[in-house]
Structures are given as structure tokens and as C-alpha cells.
Length: 186
Picture 1 (cartoon, rainbow, N blue to C red):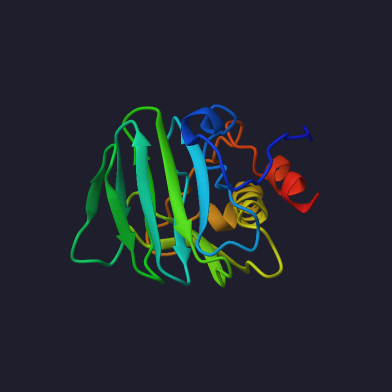
Picture 2 (picture 1 turned 90 degrees about the vertical axis):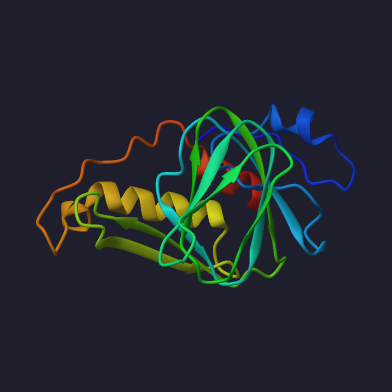
């Protein structure tokens, strides 16, 4: 693992700080007692799963173009361009799909409750796999890393029970979740 040198603080320039960020790092920028918390990522590719947050969150774009895709909602997606704010109700599956390199900020409750990562079949849209955790016990980055690695390691999790399609493993080389989690625990 690589040591990530990122610090929480209350005064910062998000554009300068984002140069230290990576894909879906979701690094919390403010001191841990601040509510709501700002989580920053600099994304060059689409999120490899749908995310469910128990509590409401808001996603905003500082740069680049993307969309926020939703499952089981009347609205299927919202564009996410600089200055846009997208409200995501608690319990709603959503995924950021990048058109170009983008800096995103996710506003989440300091005590965020449960989160889950979910994968769907690309052929029939049935749910393939889900990993749920409590943010009291694990950081989001630990949840992303564990769920994604488990999805890759177990072919049963990548096999659709509805249509039988076996999905390929995820390329996780662009994600630093394990390193971010270690940095946050220190």
C-alpha cells in the first residue's frame, strides 16, 4: 500500500486539493466533527458500481462533464456540469458516469449510516451483487474496496441468476480505496 498524504482542514482551495485526488477517492475534506462533510474526488472514468447512501446526499461538479444515473426513479439521470447540484434521496441507487475528467464533491451527513455498492446485469438489469456496510464500522473506501474485490474474486457474484450472463472482472487499478482508508484511519 502507498501512503496517501492528504489532510482534513477547514480552509482549502478545492481545485488545488483536487490535484491530489483520484477516481472516487471520496476523501472527506473537513475536520471529522463537521456536518455535513464534503467528500472530494477527481474522476476520469465512470463509477464501477451503483452506490446507495442511507441518508440524503448532494453531488456537485466543480469541473468536467458527467451524469448521475439512477435506478428505480422517475428520472433516469441528471447532467452534472460545473455549478450543478444533484440531490440524491437516501436509499436511491446512483452512479456517476464521466464524459471527461471531472472534480466532484459529495455532501454527506457526518454520521452517514449504512452504504452499499451494487452491480447490475448489463443484459437484463437484474441485480448481480450487493455489499452493505455501516460507516460506523468501515470507511466508505473500505466498503468500496471490499465489495469490488469480492465481486472480482467470486464468479458467482458476477453471474446473473436471471439470464445466466457471466460478467467480466472490474479493472480496479485506477482506484486507491485501500490506501485512502489507511490514511483516514491514521
